[in-house]
Length: 509
Image (cartoon, rainbow, N blue to C red; front, top):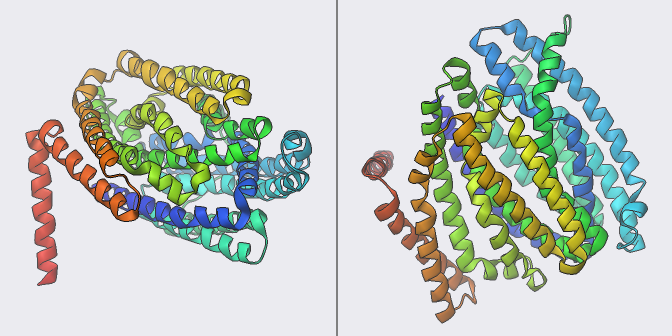
């Protein structure tokens, strides 16, 4: 299992590199094909339709916990019953999502008519209809994806995701060249999602021998699933609000251009989220196994601290680099009209680094069935964020959405959750922060030094972009080595480096 997790992490980060490399090319090409206005229409329609994922009511996050409970008891029949219940539930959810989404697509004049032009309203209608089908297909695939994840088949997950990353823009560009515009982009996503469903079904049924039982559906299991997932559903609502509702509000109050700028900032923000979740996701089955077998808070604290420190090192490295060279990158990548995306990212991501370095804690809460309080607080913060964005967006535009998001992160994810982990979950957060705190301090010093240096030698071309990025990385690495790594960490780095060099030398010979 250790080798599986290591392969999953390595492939996950390779996937991130591929995904962002593709986005570097795909997003500018997409903007060149469809223009800023149509891009904003696509983001608004997609964000609205994505709300259909709420129909899963949080069930997608419950499977691993209930699977592990039965796995530790060697209850094969219980696993088959669990699979059968999930298949029936998600079949109903997928059909409902498709129907509701198609109804949404007939109401675009009501939703966006005040700020969208007539042809943009029609485009939004077409995109919403196609994306509704895409959401339905994606939801149904969840049944098989969850089974693959519970069996810790991370290599299949990541290679499949990498193929999806490459295929989606490829299919979209073909359809764009045929003159289909953003409708072609939506069609490409639907086609790739359908292929992904086929791959999931084939692997789960064929390779992992996934089986279903419908003969005796357990009403007690259904009640347990629904009661547990109800609070995960609240988390889904919060994530949906933070990810998609600002685009809808900005589309209704400020127009498609404001949506496009904010969407680019959110796209960069999502890179940081993926950097964190790629590492933590491979430990989800392990967390549930620990809680099911021993529920040892000391072991859970050590795991959260070890993973969280690695996450913080990676997040701070990328964030500090973005501080130094991000303005040049955004202007060259998306265009001068998107320059405000740079400060938007800086403001939104800095407080986000705290919860992103602690998302193993989310899985610990779920495994212990102690996630209710988090859901209530996050829901309150999300409502506050929506209200403040709506009230302030006409005056402050996308800055209203950004600052509302920051307030919810600081109060909910930062202050409350650290108290809750320590006092209610039983994790030693003082130990966590003693281990993690030196990392952002190293980042701050390296970023400030290099940022000041860019005022002397500004980043005006790609060679300076690479030079300053390299200088920052070296300085940050040296500071980590001196101030943040323990003797054990340094010895581990040296031993792993020597082992890698010996392996390379042996393969060369």
